[in-house]
Each structure stands twice: as C-alpha cells, then as structure tokens.
Length: 409
Image (tube, rainbow, N blue to C red; front, side, top):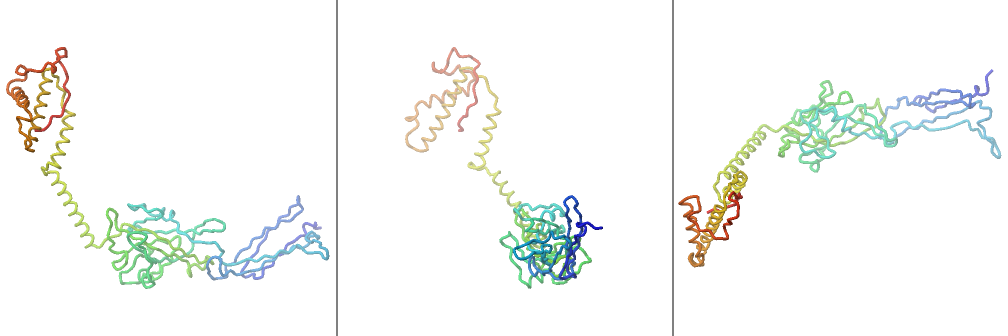
C-alpha cells in the first residue's frame, strides 16, 4: 500500500513539445515528509533563426501541476478554496539579452610570436606583418557577468584602416570593402588571405580551429608602399569587423557582431621606394659624419682650440707632478707670474692707445729684467734681490709649490 507521500505526483505540460523538452527527477525526503522535483528545460534547437541578443524571442508556455497532495496544496479564503498545486511560467526561446562578442587580445597575442612595436600604444594590440594573425573571441554575459569562449563560425572583413596613427583611420566605402576583401579578385587589391587552403576562396568562414589569416597588402591595396617613420618600420592600422550572421545557425540563435582595431608593423616597402629610402639614409649618415669630422679638424679659436686647451689644461693639471721648491724659488715663480701679467696688461693698454707704456707701468722694466736674467743665467736666485717681505728665513727649505694657472702669452 502506498503512503500518502508516495501518492504525490507532478505533471508538466508544455504548449509546444517540438520546441521545448522538459525532464524531471524525483527525490522523497522522508525526514521532512516532502517530495523534491528537479526540473530541467532544454531547447530542442528546431527553431532555425538568428536574431540580435534580446530580440525576436519566441514564447513557450510551461505548466506544472501537483496531484494527490492530500489537500496540502489548497488554501481557504472567505468564499472558496483555492488550488495551489499549479504553477505557470513562460519560457522565451531565442538569443538571450546581454550577450556580447568581444575580441580576446591576450589569447590572440598568446598564439602569436612576440614582435612588439618599437613605440607601443596603450590598449592597442600590435602584430607583426610576416606572422599569421590568429584572432580569439569570447562571449560576455553582461547580466550574469560571465565569460566563455566563442566556438562558432564567423566571417572576417576589413572595413577601415589608415597609417600614421588611430586618428587617421577611416571607414572604407562599400565598393572598397568588396574590392579589398574579395578573395577571388585578380586586381592585386587584397589586404589579407586565409592561411588554410581548403577554405572557400570567395567568402572564407572561420572557426576556433581554423582561424589563421595572412597579410598580403598587394600593390593596389591601401596598405601597400607605406613610408616608414624613423626609427620605426612601416605600420598600418586595420579596423576589422567580425560577425556570425547566416554562417552559425546550427550552433546559436544569436547574431554576434563586433569591431576592433589592431596595429600591424613591419610592412614591406616597394623595391624602388625601399632602395631610395636606404640610399637617402646612407647619404645622410655620410654627410653627418663629414660635418662632424670637419668641425673636429677645424683649427678654430672659438670651437676647436678653446675646447682642446680647456681639456688639455684640466688633464695636465691633474697629471702634473708636484715639485718641491725652496722659498727663493717660490719667490722667483711669483715674480715671473707678475711679469707675465704685466706684459699682458701692457699689450692691452697699447692696443687701446690710451697712454704709453713707460708712463703707465714704470715698474715693468725691472720685472722684465728679473725674468730675463733668471731665464738666461741659472736656476738659482743669486742675481735677484728679493724683498724682505718675500723671503721668510725661518721657513722650511722644502716648501711644496701647488700647481697654478699661468696666463698664456
């Protein structure tokens, strides 16, 4: 004999069983004297239509009715008893709202060899021209804030581009889009091509396993013959449109579309322009070397000689050994310095023509005679009479004379 709890049952009624499948599992909770039903609902996928997220949703009614519950699913009101063992809900079939297709920069760079741009731009992925481009995409659920990989099919189209920076990127016209992306074109206008050889050449359809493309930039395409900006190599910005419209009906009811901008560097140059650029750059380096060499060899008082004397004096003063002199020799050196300074001042006065040498500097003759006698005769101080204040007889005979700068004659 069945117990009252075992007699409880649930019935699920669907308005269109061809579109919606309902399955349930039952669990008897004897401790709580209750019955638990776990219900799962699945879209059979027979509705072959695509729409934008949250639009053109198809409603399907689902009713759940509980039987043999011994009156526990009834409630009394003032006039009647209401049956509470029935629940009704509506299931919307189609593309759920909040879905968005996004370009996964990190995953795309992870499957590409690292050839970073010389001058990076923040939030701008950079790829190398000679390497294949393998884009990766994710689906973001903005309602539940979750991500999952996009594994469906899609088509790729270059819809804009420009060189020299993001501000120079422009949208191509419909005619240009058809010309630059038509894989059957024979006018040398293609920007890119699929890496897989078994794809439809007219409209390649990509998926997660086969998604590589190669950059062609044929001679009539907008990315051909791009001039470099020293020291960076030629580069171009591509605006790419990706959509799964009409090519991914079997895996999703959603139409996903996204656009993203990438930067490609290392574009090849035309042979003539490349040779001209290399020649001009070589000539520039040669001219620069000649100019620098001429400046260094020029015996100019303001440039070369001044620089040479300054550097030489600094090195000489650092390397010049310290000579030990007695008090008399120190005094002779001081007088020689004063005589040289007097001669320099006399020369300046004579150039100005303000007064004569004999009136302005009468003591210079004596200083010159002292200097000449010292240069002619000997290294001792026997022919020079020093003032009493110059020589200190109590001073040590081994005084050290520091290096001093002598004026140039």
